[in-house]
Length: 94
Image (cartoon, rainbow, N blue to C red):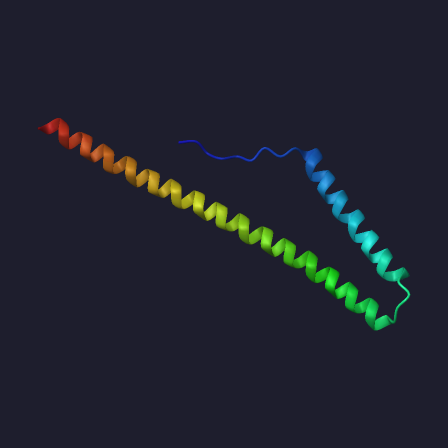
């Protein structure tokens, strides 16, 4: 049975972390330089943080579902293989 191992380069990981940090700094700089009241800046900052949190949560939920589906499929494949092996050994007796 094949095991799934994702192939992700370290360069891609570095790029994604750098991209996130740059985007967060740009968002913080934009909110800081915004000509608005302190409460409006706070509202935008909370909205930006909530957006980042919800994106991470959705990503984790989708990944967890994919991993559980993969494990379930492995279990079903193993049950099917066992059932086929039992049937084939019973056929050998007749």
